Image (cartoon, rainbow, N blue to C red; front, top):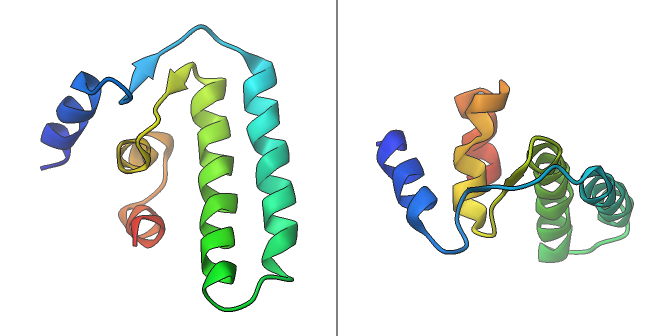
Length: 96
C-alpha cells in the first residue's frame, strides 16, 4: 500500500525529509536534467534508457527541492509523484 511505503520512507535516514528551501539546489537539478536530456540523443544501448531515466528523475527532484523535500532513496522520491499531479501511469513508467 502506498501509504505504508511513504511511512517507511519517512522513517529512513536518507528517506523523505523536509528541509530549508534552497532555490539554488532546485535550479542545479533543473540544469542537470537539461544537460542529461541532451546526452540522451547521443547515448547508445542501455545507456540511452539510463540517461533518460536520470533526466526525468532530476527534473522531478528539482521540483521536490523547490518544495523543501529531500530524499536520497529513488523509490521513495518516486512515491511522491502523485502528490504533484502525475498520474499512476506516469509514476509507474518512471519506476519501471
